[in-house]
Length: 435
Image (cartoon, rainbow, N blue to C red; front, top):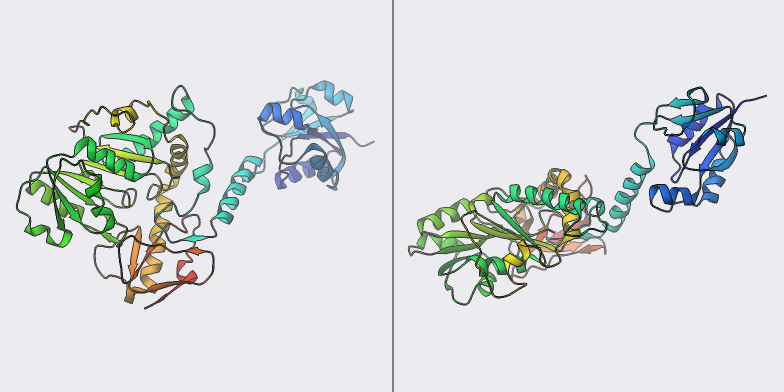
């Protein structure tokens, strides 16, 4: 008479690791699957299984190595073996069942596969499916699986898990910014830019004009500022003294990157501190440490979800205290309002893969410059985020969203975030350019 061999499993997502273990067990006798119930999985693992018990049972009964499938609890003891007349329990090397050594046989787990790993792959596949729409916009252009990997109920006070996330993200973003202090809040980069201006900028102000995003800083300034505007190409003409110099490092509306070292030298020359709109440059370009204060958001070069904005600044700067509540850096620093919890969680997922994602932006940029080299600007002022092309972009399929810059241009601007969810670049195949 054949021995009865039990293999206990949840099999919420049945994979080849399960089948290989069952096959090994069949070498010792007829296989009885001890299958964990839905309620046991829910109480022990904290979620309802993807497949209900009856469907998991149906699948396992169809496996040729299986003789019988019975319902068993999460943890087995010798009474279960007696109940089902089992001679030997076979299990992977993660066994926690209370079975005597002479009644159990342990096999190594199949490497490279588990239900948890399959769930991550499903998450990746789902985000890739959702990202088939090619966004040529500056952000957010894709939703990465890293963005949603850590999304869960979190709160800004008394939640140790969120505290760890926030501290990790804060340290990472401060390192990217090259600044000493960082304030985060819920809202767009525009909110952070305006709050930073009202918290630090005063007196005589020099604004370096490169396009829409630099020029809008004028309306974000306190009305008491004495403002002078110079075009970027004319800054050598500046001789007056100023308290602050303002600029947009990457001008997305014209696909232009200014020389931040040059701007910093001019700021030093005129005795001013440097305020930088880093929305299009943070996480992508170097030398942010040259700024005295800067503002940016979570959804562009940081590759997070929308919703978080940041002000980063040097130790010697003290934000001005205001009589206002929400529009006040002190309020945000002291966590007196709801923060960008889930946007921070999305950045927590991104941090470890940020170099990979940045490299994918570079690949998209390279493919664009190589295909349309005769239509792009041949200069050093090319930002990584986007490329200016002298011509009209024509999509090759209907699932493409073009970027409409806020500055008037004779050509087009392509942004390079739309394919960062995958290793391959297809932008040069999915669009054409008509001069």
